[in-house]
Length: 511
Image 1 (cartoon, one colour):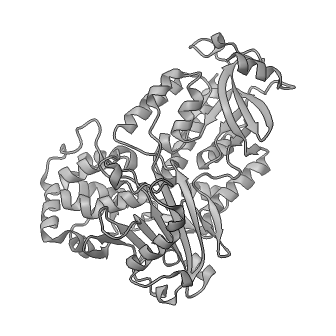
Image 2 (cartoon, rainbow, N blue to C red; image 1 turned 90 degrees about the horizontal axis):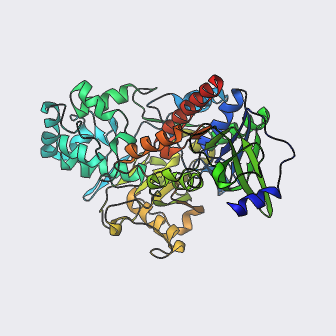
Image 3 (cartoon, rainbow, N blue to C red; image 1 turned 45 degrees about the vertical axis):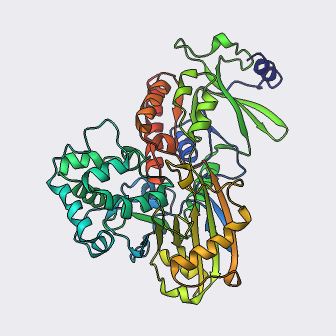
């Protein structure tokens, strides 16, 4: 603390920040939305991001001359949060639905169509041909018992994993052949580890309301903004949402600082260099938040009455731990280590989209290392139009969190050679698509490494976050945002962040 005070004295600000100044730490989607909504509410806003680019997991990269999504490429339509934001940013006409052909799931005996009316792979219609193909007669009979069970089964426990809920109500076959591949592909995790209330909020309550898991899934699907479509995207890619947000923030006068790493955040009085340890927040009169940043060889400080921490969970707890050590026991586990390999290939035979929009791979399938393949040019008409006939964009993902580290397929330099990723992806694509894709067909490739970026909603995570929120709520002028708080996916992050900012603005106006 003494060293921090001395450093602060060397960087005394020329003027004190205005009472309605807000600082946002983290320039992913949550941070950008927080900055936008605060600016619209009358705050002056500064936003800091450690990376050189904005958007976090909603990123872009150029492969073979095409600007493509390097992270999220769609959003869930279970609520209108993302569509509403896109509309506010003038992107309403860019919202598109994917090819309705759907995807496949690769089981140990080979591929079958993935049920189209499910949540996390949990089917709502057991009579659908693709469900019967995946489960077989015995699997369908066991799953049908769900409708005859008391609604209390799987819904009375304080917490439940996705696997525990599905196994109890629909049986092991639904879990292993439908749910596990979807959960691995979407959340990069084992269904045994994921908290169902975080990754499918309201699902257990839906069982109590509608009487069965299948009925609860059907109700969630019917509640989407466009029935029959679980996801949507943006023509041009989801990264265009980030571009529109950044342009909007700059036009509104938000002070934006990319490439600025936050070294520390702490509370101080109006003089930024008078921050002895005894001035830390202890429930007494509130003091201002001070943000200590560095940018290359530069060092500086910013002060604000409102601080939004919109980083990943481990970083947020580490930053706030000095002032709020009571948060430290609730630090979430880092997310799984994921590699996304993008291949742009010249293979006219793929024009027929042999596996629809892609393939999800059941854990344990021999000979295939990928957990999922997205045939992006088959999934999105706008992308197929951009690349032209014969040219295809394939995205293969690797890495998942698992109970047994040996099953995690964690691709790290110590366990997997990075230079083998593209050849591995070519081999996996050939096997999954049933059409040979070779290095000679390759027009371009890229490997994106997402190390711990995807929030890991382990069993009990929701309860832990409730305690974190309660502790943060006791501190004036502090807002937490991001996937670790709101849940995985753009729909959860956008909606959760906007609710949190509205509450903070309402509180500030009452003070």
